[in-house]
Image 1 (cartoon, rainbow, N blue to C red):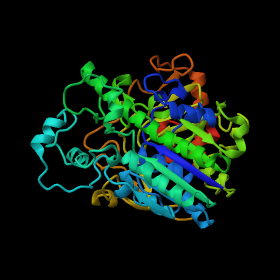
Image 2 (cartoon, rainbow, N blue to C red):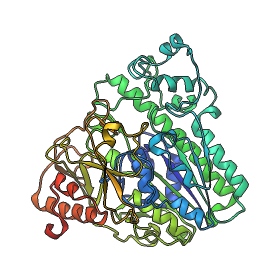
Image 3 (cartoon, rainbow, N blue to C red):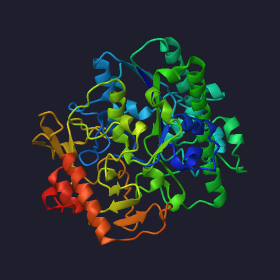
Image 4 (cartoon, helix red, strand yellow):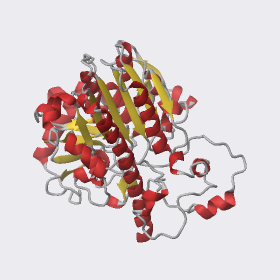
Amino acid sequence: MRAIFVLFDSLIRNGLGCYGGTSIKTPHFDRFSKKGVTFDSHFVGSLPCMPARRDLHTGRLNFMHRSWGPLEPFDNSFPEMMRDAGIHTHLVTDHMHYFEDGGSTYHGRFRTWDFIRGQEYDPWKAMVEPPLKRLREKFSPRHYDFDAGWKRLQHAVNCEFMQEEEDFCLPRCFASGFEFLDLNKDADDWFLMLECFDPHEPFHAPERFKEAYASGWKGGVLDWPMYEMVNDAPEEIAEIRANYAALVAACDHYFGQLLDYFDRHDLWRDTALILSTDHGFLLAEHDWWGKNLMPYYTEISHIPCVVWHPQAAAHAGERRRALTQTMDLMPTFLDCFGLATPSEVQGRSLLPLLDADTDIRDIGIFGMFGGPIGATDGRYTYYLYPDDLYAPGLYEYTLMPMHLSSLFSGAEMRTAKLAEPFDFTKDMPILRIDALKDARRIPIHDNKKFDPGVGTTLYDLDADPAQQRPFRDALIEKRFLRGIAEVLAAHDAPPEFFDRYGVPRLANAA
């Protein structure tokens, strides 16, 4: 058996034609949907980027125990399990967060890996005296204030070395993937994870894709919106959205090259292909840019997933309404190779769903450490807020005290106490560290705060898919609270987590 997992970052569901999108032409994503099985109720788990990847590796949610951080010593990791079973696992990625402190244990779980340099603020090219005058003329100060910090200047420097299309990270990722396939297409027992940071911001696409979505904007580059409330002029919004559309179109084009490769070499007969993303992105919907700070609206939490497996060829083009999540991909990958699922895994393999649309859960929950809990049953979404998002009593449980790009501070570590093992830590005791308000923790560092929106509320996705009409309903909320309690209990969430959100302990949840 062989399998390829293509993971794009921030690929919005409503941008794909196969999910009803009309603003971007995505012929190749749509072509794949006609070949595989498309999941219509696929949702995130832990947010954002690295917490989502920890769910992906381990097959369980982690946001109730930990913020953004590395894999832990007790974590199961599907590529490591495959590697130990004699399956060659290979990662191609330009996701630079793997190479910061908070993502440092992920890529090493693969047998081999290739890091494509240059995305976002990847510290790739060193220009001690960059051409600031020329760069300021090229990039809009609205998105590129080079005096405010080094990261946006580093991206501008990296762009200096991406003049031709083949210099961009996206084509280089696919070129590396095709190199792996050329070397190994006749071999057996391998897993390729082809991971592209695009269409994550900055929305930096090759020129020919931008031409197809030109907005008429004549100012400097506008492709990296801050995570903030929208206060842009209509023409600025149009340009930012056009740059995102161009990048999705580029992703679609290169994904189409992979489909062509499958056709040329008849990989369809013995190779699984799975397509998904880690989360979505708000492009001025709900008056917000980005993710992290606002409620996890469906543009962020409801994501695409399409699966091809040779043994399910008879179901080509079918769709499934079963409620699935990111954590279900880990046991799916193991199932492709006939490997047993560890007891700690809470996700469920999607392979049985390729044959028949069967419910695997009633309620799925998702969220970000310290933020509201999101929950869905496929029809309704529920956002549960604590009385105070910044009340004390929230703890990080970890043996890897690292934030996005820094170690935990001395102030944090002085609060550390050794706690008893959880049921998934394989008898390892664990550090319990106060989640200090001023910690360098995504997303609330640099004085950023979660937006409370309208607070605890429900939306009916059937009647109100754009989530414009929040409402409350005691009976529906009681059912959701019961479901949330069951999921938290299954993940051995710490007692204070239940108390923080007013979720009854399972024995009292009826």
